[in-house]
Image (cartoon, rainbow, N blue to C red):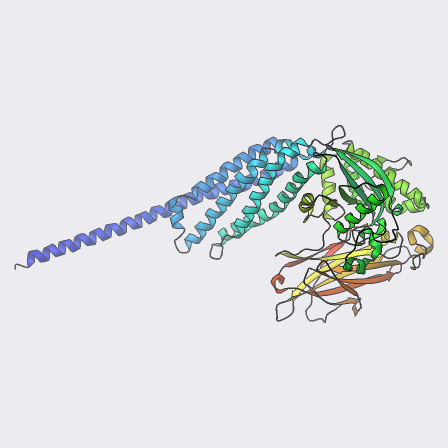
Length: 606
């Protein structure tokens, strides 16, 4: 009997402990419920802010495109507020602790990272740029009283560079988000963010390069002199066309004047190359590349072409230029869409519709004398230049024309200043050999005229590229297919001017088109073989700056076509990257198609 009170006390203590444990469990459950509710509510609110931020981005793009700078500034401020709110809602201690909960934590972590990245972009990129966007519209590049106002561009340099840095970091951060265990809606949101940043990153990078380059190259720090090469696509060169005419541009504090024009044939031939050529350039294109101004663009490497042209100008004039530009009559036609028709001293009116036809074909029938042809080209270029330099053009159309020409590889730019050249490198203006990225392997198809005439006005070109893993070792096999056609009239030998057909002066019968095609693969690729119209064909092979090259030669009569296919073996690390091709711009834009690659066909297959 004496043990009963102790037993009751023990039972009471056990009951108290049980109730305590129960209350603790209930408290934990309640806290979890509250935490889930807290995170859920804040997550829903953050989702709303992010969705409105995305809508603001779309609005901002439209406003900037339409020139509504004041509206864009208001939208930028709103975007910043929405992004900041989303970040705040997903960065409190309860949310941070919840990220360690199995399964759900991965999703919460990804949402928090998305909100942080959007806020970083809003504060680090949109905010600084919105402060200068009001004075940095498309009209900033329009000359007023013959000069471009460089001050807005100079003020924009620091903010735009900050924006480019922020976008680049955001893109890397987005790529690092772990979505291996996230729910489909979260994974989709992360992928959308990545795609948007990837797209914007390229655009902002280009804008930054332009803003950093433009003031100095337009004479903000002292006078600049540039050599302008007018490339004639009717006689193809790998870099675009034969430099039939050259001009000197003088730039002073935003003002640009055309100082001097000369015929390309007035330079050379020099007895020896004006600068040393590497073995690949000499072997593929000959030492004439460095002995004639008209041949400096035989190589697709514009930095080489520019340095050669610069040296030739120095030898003839005794003065050095600060850079070299190149453009073609097709670009001139695009610019005429912005300037409108331009009257010429000959009585002709140059328009966007007739520029290419007049400058690359009709002029030869009209004026058989090459000196008169050169004078006609000079007057056309001078007339368009005068209208552009006076500001007599639609700014948006002008920028669109330059963008289009650049995208088609019709514009080239090289600077003698190493710092400026580094900024130009990697852009479409640089004229570099094909590149490789984790997403894309690039091939090059470059054409050089072998007829010694203007018959390439009638040359059509279609290029296809494709790749597949056909080997057990995982190395990708890629093929580039090139089809060229001579579209000249059947009676071209007699109906076309001798200056157009060449008259057989360089060993090619009148009416025929002789073409050299150089196919470039990415660095470290291995040449496998080549075919013409399905049959194996011998080619010249070389390595140019690390790129395997296969060069073929063909002669086509009017109406004839030829199809070449060149195959290369790539590296396993790039086996699943996409493929694309860059090519010499002709009179017509190159038709580029995907190539259906069949591993069952022998290499090379037609």
